Amino acid sequence: MGRVFGPFLFINHKSALYVCFFVAKYFMSEILYTLIATHITIICVTVFLHRGQAHKGIEFHPALSHFMRFWLWLTTGMITKEWVAIHRKHHRFCETDNDPHSPKTYGLTTVLFKGAFLYHAASKDKDMVNSYGVGTPNDWMERNVYTTHSRLGIGILLMLNVILFGWVGLLIWGIQMIWIPFWAAGVVNGIGHYWGYRNGNTKDNSRNISPWGIIIGGEELHNNHHLDPANIKLSRKKFEFDIGYFYCRLFAKMHLLKIR
Image (cartoon, rainbow, N blue to C red):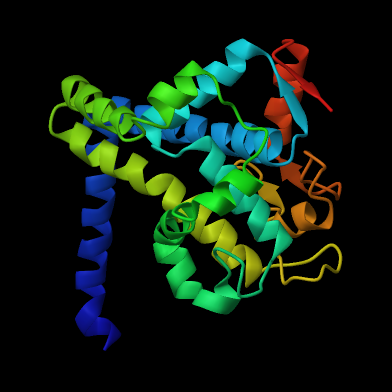
C-alpha cells in the first residue's frame, strides 16, 4: 500500500509547499494586513469590551477608548452594550438554561460554529440588554453611529479592502467577518467550557485551552478568568502568558489607560 501511494503523497506534499511559497511570494502584503488587522480586533475585544467594559477593570483614556470603539464598529459591527450585557449574563447564569451561550445547553458544535447566532438571538432581549448593559458608552457617536448604523462599518471595511487589494479583499473581508464569531464566540465560549486544564475549581466547567494566550488575546485562559472575573490579568502561573495583559501594561505606561 505504501509503495502505491508513496509517490502520490510526495507529489501532494511538494504541491502544498509550492502553493505556500506562491502565496507567500505574491500575497505577503495581504497576509500581513489580515494578521495585523485581526489581531487588533482581538485586542480591542479582550481589552476594551471584556476587561474594560464588562468587568470595569480598566479606565481608558478617551483617545484609546474612541479608537477601539471605532475599530470594533468597522471590523465587527458589534454593539458594545449588547456584548457587555450578554457576557455579564453569562457569568450570572453560567452553564444553566439562562446562559446565552452554554455548550451544556446548546451543545459544543452549536456554540463553536454558531456562537454568533446565539449572541444575535440574546441581543433581541432588550430588557436584558438594558439591565445588564449599564455603564457602557452612551455618547452621541454611540447613539447615532455605532448603534444605529452598526452594519455600516463592516460595509465600509468591505469597500476599503476591495480598493486596497482587489478581489483578494473580498476573501480578507470574509476572514475578518468570521474571526471573532469563531475564535471568541465559538472557541472561548465552546471549547473553553469543554476541554483543557484547570487551575482551580469553579461552579462551572470553565477550562484553560492553552497556557499561552496569544491568538485570542489571552482569552484562552478561560478557567483563570472564571476564578477571578474582576482581575484583568488572566495568567496565574509562571508558565502562562496573557498577551492581553501585556497590552494593558503597555498602554498604561503610555498613559492611555489605568488599571483599577
